[in-house]
Image 1: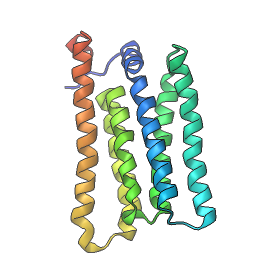
Image 2: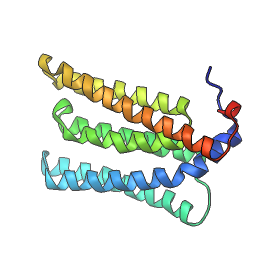
Image 3: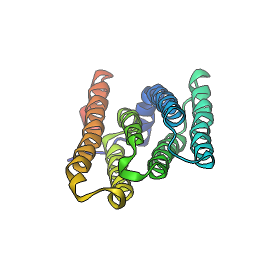
Image 4: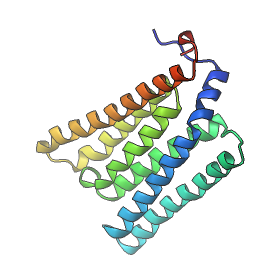
Length: 183
């Protein structure tokens, strides 16, 4: 049975993982911006919207990064909200680029990895399942019947990234000496 950590334990876990969230977000923002500009698939107005969404994520990440640099903890609600916003923006970018045929689905990987190593496995599970469901809803209308195996393999890769991150979360938690009954 999975015992949820207390609020203070969750706070401690996030304090140790917040730099991972910030760094992974910078990576995702950089890659997303390069992919959007280097391989534009939208009209000029669509490209402006996509770049604007990515730059909004950059501004939000700058605020989170400033908290880390100043030695202040990122509030739990802000970390959860930032992770949700990441997944929402990635979903919007995938949908804007045509759903299943979009190569931007790869941006889900650093986002899921960052939150899975920073948040407890129960939270990771919620984010991973929601991400998978949203990706299926976006992809199914644009996928051919022969694309089912590819869609399933992408979903399995998303699940594998979340699982590996959760395993790392547990290993890191054990390394820090948190008692086994706390997680």
